Length: 284
Image (cartoon, rainbow, N blue to C red; front, top):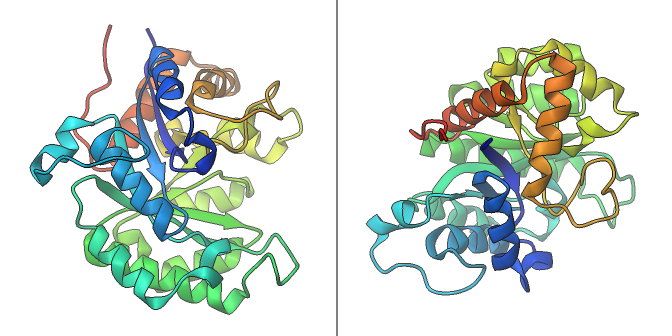
């Protein structure tokens, strides 16, 4: 059976609050053995840690902190403030995030970054505020020695500039839901970042993403779903979850003219390298 690592899912999203347990049972039955639960504000980050600690969307964590990472190894927590939530965050939230980064379940800081796609002020925080929050969280990641999960939309050059100025390559990370050109992909890879590839690669019109997958070595690519968002082709109006990974892996295999088994094995190894895990690809 093929095994998969979903490096980016939002099982801390309220849309999973009512039925997360049966969803995860189906996800595990599909061969998805690991996932990273990505925060987008302080509360969702706390829910992600709770899920990684207790195996449930809500509930009590194990009393002994040393048990946490070993008790529910299938879940990792990633904590951070999404750029579109920058205006809702306070300085105290950053302090609490830095403290939370010491939890044994936390593997990275994210998703953080820049999003200039929306043009209306009531939807999109101004660029200066986004950049301020981005820089502050990069510094948290560097102090913690953790990788970063980067959200970058319509902001490629500012993202690169800030990553360079803040020396983000010292810890590295992933450019989540990669959507830029092949040339920009090479820039990020040279900086020590891998590229997160999800359901968009299955869309017939996603020319740039498909070219990136064809040309960038598999060693720099990881699988993700962004659940409950961005379901693959044929499911675009449905709530997404990690069961989409086989379809994503198959599309990558076709584009690179390699086996799905190789895609699963190499992206698993890449994910473990990203999140600093020692977890060999499951055999059998």
